[in-house]
Image 1 (cartoon, rainbow, N blue to C red):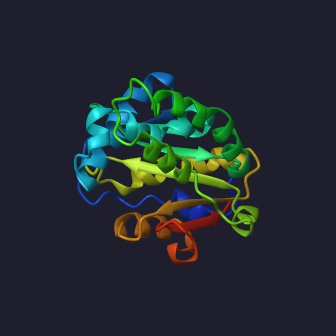
Image 2 (cartoon, rainbow, N blue to C red; image 1 turned 90 degrees about the vertical axis):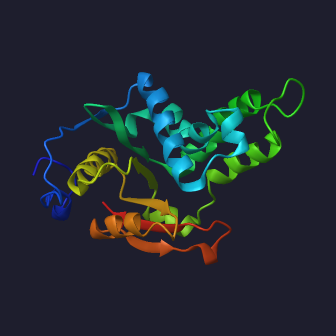
Image 3 (spheres, one colour; image 1 turned 180 degrees about the vertical axis):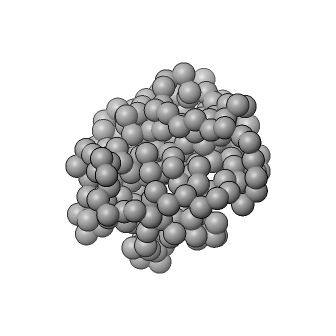
Amino acid sequence: MLLPIGSSNELFTHPPPLFPTSRLYNIRPYHSKDKLELYRMVRQLHLRTQGVQESSALHPDVIGDRCLGPCLVLSPEYCFILEDELGVCGCVLGILDVRMFAKRCQASWMPAMRDKYPTKGGNTHPNPQDLIQLMEEDQGEYPESLLFHFPSQLRLDALPELVDVSVSRTLLTAMLTALKANGSQGVFCEVQPTDRQRLEFLTKLGFLEILRGEARSREGVVLGRLL
């Protein structure tokens, strides 16, 4: 009753794990020292789904800079870490105000990336201009009608070894609580249409499809829920 989630009781209903386990998990705020482990984790996830690519082989930070970097640098207060006895095994990243976040990315994050992946002189990265363009596209252009009701955004990543759904649910609840406590009225996330497991997980937590790739330049399905 003390948490500012309103009537979202389903977030606190934790079904028993599918498989008995004695593994202990810890959910805590992100610290700057976690960056290397998070980059390693998301690189591992990327390699499992898309294989080794030339860009990631030459520069191991590429995937982390694209997927996690902006949030870790510009919105660390809404980043939470999931760890077990082996180390970091999941994370959830939140953005309180997507409009303001996009402006800050263009003002500080993208210039830093252009310096890190230069297009001329001393460059070892293939097609760096293509990489910068991908990073800009990753920020996404979401319609104003969406951001009016869902001003916040989230990203959830976890290693496939994490089979206890209730742990991911608790991790997500921590971030939703932080967003709601700071004035957010709704949150959305983008999921690939082929990721059936993620779509099912979020749907069970009250997320509904609000935008699909056919209506925009990106392929992902956008799911949202009010807070």
